[in-house]
Length: 344
Image (cartoon, rainbow, N blue to C red; front, side):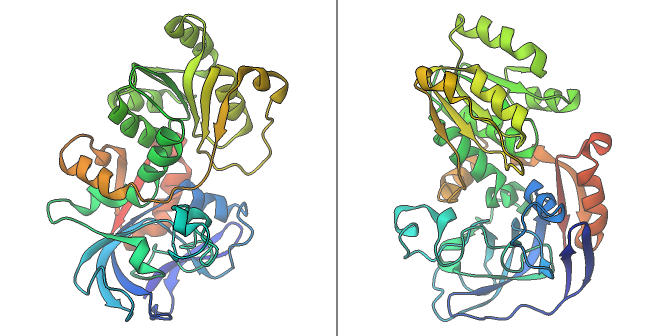
């Protein structure tokens, strides 16, 4: 088969790669019909995820058709359309039994395209398929569900749910990349009064407004805006979705006493946690990896037309154009790329 292979920092190639095989009775083999590129993939390529072995097929967001299943897989069968979640869960370890799939002690949680071959390929092996895939309803297209594999579940679970967004809240989302915009979409399920998006890029601010944000501003404007909206108290919830120190510190500065800071962004370098000021504000800080247990409910919301995740797609390419897709994605400042979807 053809696959996008990581050969070391700065080195990727779309080339021939051995076909995946069933290795455990909990595996399935997926014929990939659509995949996409995530910011985490670019972190790997930059060398920011050093435990990724050289020679790994990248990609942890994919949908397709089941080709073959191991003897222990009973939830799906060959021919079923499924999405594979970004986390692989054994289902029985200390953390899986309490729904913390991202911390699975057996698989490592985020395994696809990180610790084992992923889904930027014609075929992929999905470990622990019983807990790591969901059947796709006939009425939903690949494009409607592909972001449930990671960014929609991440924005919703790690941002909205852990941030405890409530009706009438003022929330601030720092970073209007794909996961930040996914948080804009899914936060509307809880009817916050104000959804303030902060980003340096005007086009992304404009996109955030189109997706339902009530305000979209640059970092220099947001302090006065939040003070005006909240009577000087600060935001009820701030969600950091950028992955850099300054955005994290901005999210911490904007939260009100007793509020919640939810970190989503993947950080490659340290960020300062200003406990000298935050301790007295009695804030709650959360972070983490999604379990993807929200996928069924989010799938129902998409089917009902509650929100449209295809609005995140800016570029559509063939699988064979994978390297071109990476060029588009990494040059987002020039290409206005959000999500690049690559289909068979």
